[in-house]
Image 1 (cartoon, rainbow, N blue to C red):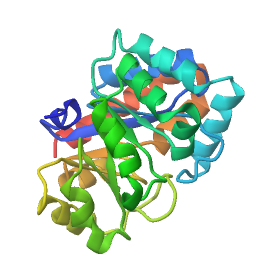
Image 2 (image 1 turned 30 degrees about the vertical axis):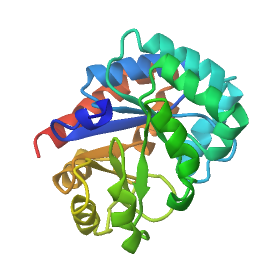
Image 3 (image 1 turned 60 degrees about the horizontal axis):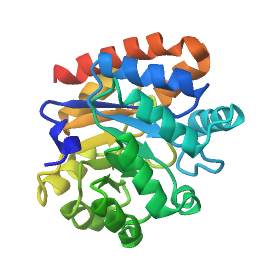
Length: 257
């Protein structure tokens, strides 16, 4: 079993942060605070100039990180430093072009070197995933499959060979906080569970403890990004403490489901 799947011994909370926003030292502290607050897995976005799956909140975080001089190499170095303290699984969320530009083999070697456990690439459709799946597997990294409300008949097919966990996208469109989640995620999760024991976590649009608890009740865990990135935008270098408090409130909510 992978370290990622292993992290779902209880309902999991998976926070996301954009690497290098507002700077790498702050991101490192945020990762440490997230783990202390009970995060089971941490997702780190590699800043990219054209993050097509992201809404304005995370797009702006990408811009801030790039403006502050964050590069993929510097992010790898910071993760390696953070790994001296942070023991929970860490995933990278990035885009296909960023990996190709860096060099796929070199990218995976650096992931292994700094202790990355999994990779999410939202702009690669299931039919083209071999390009990443094979090289990730060769390096012992879980390539995380995503299912969306539009996946319909493909859900079982995508879930069948999923590794780590299945990322269930709860809302159509880009990332961002939503006042309510209307997608029937329960039936999406049910289709996944028919073909695999791999855990399912729900993301996109979750921002309150109530929403996190509701989604965790229908799955194995909840993923939150934009609400955390908003805290980073608001508090800047002072964000780690605020993010830690928020993560604790969300983990407490899903733990009690």
